[in-house]
Length: 136
Image (cartoon, rainbow, N blue to C red; front, side, top):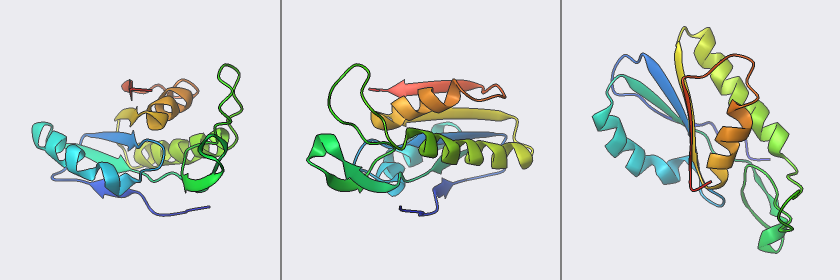
């Protein structure tokens, strides 16, 4: 399992944190350029760009790639092996931000990362300020 540290973008003292999860096959650094452009519009916001673990993805012929969870391609009721592990990783990032005194927390993601933001955010015991899924 890939345990790469998340890419963190901070331009100033921050009052809010956005954890942004990438799509299947990408990595945290792969979404850095659009996030840098967005960060210019929202100073005072810290962005955390974690990278999903590298795992075989059944739907992609078993090829290993960064994936928040496995997809077997069957559609409704599809097995999502690894989704709970990934949710725990994201929850740990949220906890670290709360422990650091950050009160405004957001989860966001694109495609599979969007599904992860919904899956994780809706199960959090403490409320979030927002959850967004882009093309999830």
